[in-house]
Image 1 (cartoon, rainbow, N blue to C red):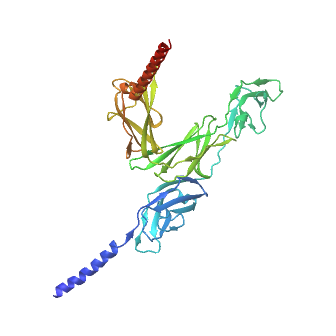
Image 2 (tube, rainbow, N blue to C red; image 1 turned 90 degrees about the horizontal axis):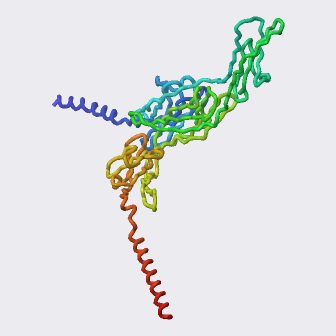
Image 3 (cartoon, one colour; image 1 turned 45 degrees about the vertical axis):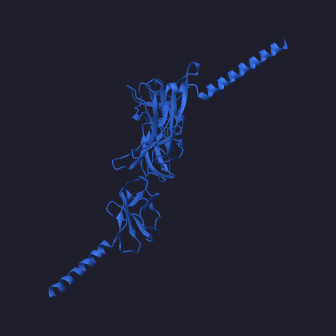
Length: 427
């Protein structure tokens, strides 16, 4: 009896301790979104939220560096709301950032951390583009140098030092033919004129901006944003911005620059644009919406006939469209067999492979349909209605047309007969 009482006293505290441990509420893993880079001392906004927010629980959010040290002030939200964490960038923000979510005034709530976000803090950059020309002689001393541009004096904002000419802030106004003149300083009687050196500096054109999306092994999406110029003399300074916030800046010897930005399906990713400059001029692209919508809704296929001599149908163009989707990709099927890019009687064409051209013949006869999916994954496939296409069927005269022609011909015969009878009776 005494032993059993001791056993009961021992087990009750264990059950209570287990209840306290399992009774703690652990928040769902938060999602941290923000730019990949920002300028030192600028204000940058990060967004953090818990997807499965418990009801009636206010959530605290804070931004931490890779070592778990707080780098931005705590923000709190009501249930189901997203937190916007504003940070005045310092070098403590450089590296990996995480968002920590915890319960507000709730000691029974266990905090949770988001995946890390790689972030770079960029210090002040002062980029200028210049041209330096150097005049060399094979021999001689006491030499002075002068420069001509298009047979006239070089502009005053150039810098001359001994046998060098430097033009800061190069622009198209500095294009032309340069000539170096070397003179003997002692008596000024010997003057040598160099061969001309033509410099052609083009201002940058208005940049075009576009993006493509791909997924990695973890199914995370990344947008590859491209800023491209038609003309412009390198080197060119490319700047990517979200609103007025600089997210990347790079100096390139080409007319193209790109930037990788993480994106989330069906989430507003804001507008981005790019700027390009190779001197005094600065050109800005249009704004680009990075929001990515998956394919959805109905898939429609329509046919368009190609006619040859005597109005005979000799080919068919099929076009496939989907109701929704930022990056759709289409596949074509003939009698349930998937078609490749090009075959003996067909060819796939158009943006996202949205078109199929057919040369009619015995091999082309059959049932056709298309499927629409996302370019960046194979998770969703939407199918159109099926269309049967045969050369004989497309060139067959419809029964109602045959009936109409026969009726008109019959009426014509009757009319001619009546006219003949009328003429005979009048005689």
